[in-house]
Image 1: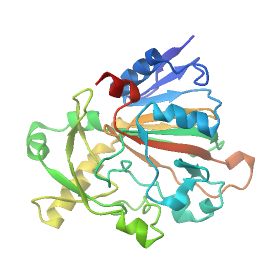
Image 2: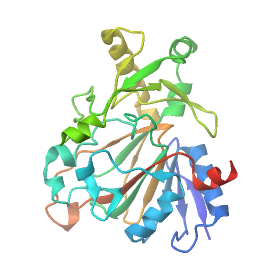
Image 3: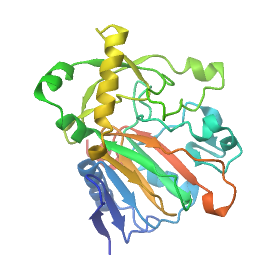
Length: 290
């Protein structure tokens, strides 16, 4: 029997008793998407899936989008990204820890990701958490004066704009001129209204953001920094400790996230491997109804 329980956090739920190899009905997807949009984070426990099965599940949530860094894509499955500390490319610290900064997936593209999911294949005994921050709650907690000032602001984004804290790391580096050419400056609202729930949320105030239209660089940068520090306050943050078989799905239009720093694996106890899918657009069940 499928059970949905709140996580021990201010947002997010876990799903127990579900086997996605056997059950992916329209009724189930309506329920899962509804729960995700209400709670921002959905952790489906205890899954055993091959990459093609996982990718098929990902397609139910939108159009899987290959990462702009083509060297990071999973061989044979370009829509999947291998995240962790066991692959050959993960020996490079800048690659292995390239997500150790607060960011929003694909905020550096004109059409950003609508959801991201990570499927846990290997989980270290210690560390390896994903940190997530609820940006609906962060926006709601702002005072009226700040909301009025920022509600119509537009933010400039570009991949690799850089972290603003000493405990963060630059994004997984661009390797080719072609990749660089595919990463122009783009514009997104600072406050984004969710297309399904209508909730307002701070959007992309860290990671790829580097300026605000109409403000001089120093002023825009200072405002983004202040909003970021507010947005990642402990009251808004949940740190997910993975178990093998977890599929963690978050609403990227309503959250920010950051990896935690890890070393390259030395044995079974510290191995970390997850398969990432980021999707664009509406879930299939919503697109069919439109």
